Image (cartoon, rainbow, N blue to C red):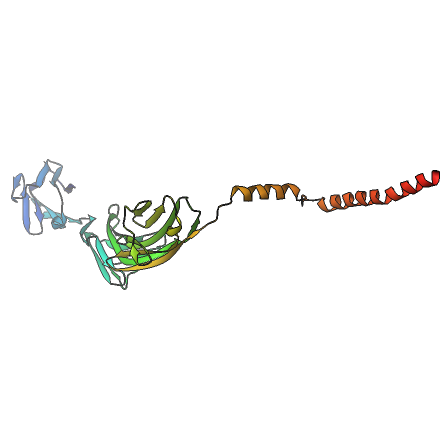
Length: 318
């Protein structure tokens, strides 16, 4: 930025003029006495004597005096320059990877005039407010929920706050969040799933009885993703049924879960036909069914009683 000093008013009685910074003479009349190229003379007229300082920094702060010498006595005019500087983060911690349960310390050093206020904030939906209102952020026994980005903000109202971020990665051993057995008929496709959360991402292995299943086995395929492993059977046979073990591991540990692939009986054509016939012969159980069945029974009973009466009537007639 640039600052101009126009504190001297000149009239025809003035014989000498000068600008001083503390005890250092900057200009005497039109003559420049300092070596700083940023200091220039703006005007030296019969009404005004002014200078300008370009690219102002904090070292320019202080008193500036305009001295005017007249025939009678000298006069001075003093201006105190206060330099304000936007906040700037000059030092901040690097991204860090740490094991769960350990302690961390993050640093954010900022400069500016006035001295900026430094705050830390955890960028997380569960975080509320600031986690620290200081240059230093200490976390004891960090948990996996405390991983993510931490934002350092430096502000002093001179300009918009300056913001920087540090990424904190919390490593933890795997835990299996979902492992469910499934039933599949013989000859059909079946899939066993194993989901595990871990940092770094877990590596998966599948076992049946103590024997590891190798990728590429005929009719079986293993599909692995960072948090999910699938064991796929394209054509399930009798010897495929049984108990399988999913093992998830990373550099911090491992865990396992048992998953059952069991036989699911598929309905045969004769069973389906029997079910259809049974359905056709079974009275509807909906509203009014009871009264309908009751009325039908009454009609059949009425027919049984009417038949003997008719025979008796015919015998008497003849």
